[in-house]
Length: 399
Image 1 (tube, rainbow, N blue to C red):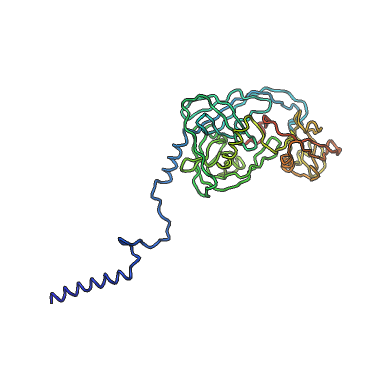
Image 2: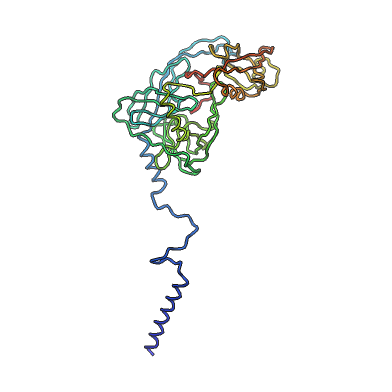
């Protein structure tokens, strides 16, 4: 009986093995792989926090603060009407000394540093008396502007013969970004040194209007949107991924004082294209195909209508005209109301500014104007905006 029992056990085991080999062929074994699962695989590398910390350590030494001091003169209106418009009433010339700051990062091993043009563009009737780059180690090193393109809002500045220059930061490929990827902004927001903020890539190809000196807007297209907080002073600093590659140059925040978690950066691939133009065209320049007439414009409202005794319901008000500009040559004055531009009825300052900027230098802008109770026509020869045009401090400022 013992022999029979042992024989039965052997036969049963063999049968079970045979059954398993034919019915569980997909079960993991020495020569088999497990069946696929629907759950996402667990990332086996370092945590996201570790990767962010590593990226910051890699990039931060190459991020700099850009500080400048500007000396110049500005015209201050003296009577209430001119103060309201910034216009042609009694005025006095005042000297001013202004300070500004932003961020940048080492772009080349020869001392070239990339930043925003609006960080280093000198004010109207003013000169930069001092431009310093402050490195992560605390060194203050004099710098000078190599090239700036105002409409691209990018600039190259340079420090010479600095032996402790940190390594250049690597530009990434912004075309490969996906919504939800980590984005790290490094810079000096609100003059807080070496600040890091973290968010995600939240949008692409954004068109962000930035206030300009005409009271209108410059429409920057193709911007990268991020939830990483970007504040004044962050401008020109890098927006990097978790690998420490620059995916954008921090530029602005939507609706300052209102928007939360909506920042904008110039994508790395656009930066890469613009760098070639900056290197070929030294000096500060406006960029191509952008018109300028030298008049600050505001949209009509009831308060302005009362100030200028205008009874019409639509139009765009000329708030200020600078001497020596196309608007001045065409006879425009503060308090004039633009009714039509190139035959098109206008109701907002932005409409007129877009027409001006769409005009190439040398073209004529035909305006129908209400001026102190009478209507007249004015032909304005559009020019290119001077690179040192000053946006008054009381106007909305970009970061």
